[in-house]
Length: 242
Ligand SMILES: [Fe+2]
Image 1: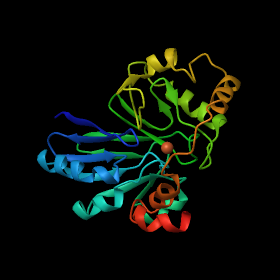
Image 2: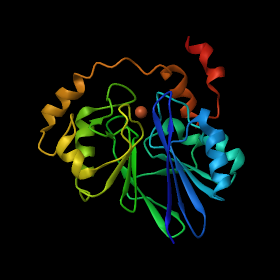
Image 3: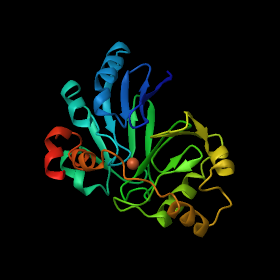
Image 4: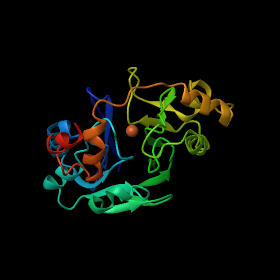
């Protein structure tokens, strides 16, 4: 028995999608799937003969639309998994998880870890030594905290919780804008530009406040679409928000 692991990239929003599966049962999970890449993802799942059991969202994204609901057309038994705090997406989610919730794929377990701060409902997920950090912890950076209930103070605590994991834990973020694909907890504790093991909360809050980022290009379409797990297309939602 081994873990099948695929890291997939979407260029427009620089989003990573991950496929995890157990080699014997072929049970699989997909994390942060993107609408415009659904053909790629379903073709890969089919090629590898994987049976999608969980469609996991790390949070309600503001920069792209999830393919969670559309994926259920291909895998009707798959369950959409969302953090408990995402009350806006409760009606389209099958499983609302909180700290310690376990999602089994074959003999592997995906463990949910609450990491609010980038948004109120952000979750990270751990399988084996692989940690999927969503927009909480990036490689050498962190997520922003200026909308969707974001809070730098809260994100500081969440990241310090992740820093308690073994240094060898591999870090797989939801995005990378600089060409990186994987890091480790040990590396981020030492080299992250926003938050290191020794940085105090005040320094981190100052770093987050100095980010001065433009809103994500697709924010007006993405947030409502993702509150329906991608059921309502971006086209339909565009007009009322223009
Ligand atoms: Fe995000």
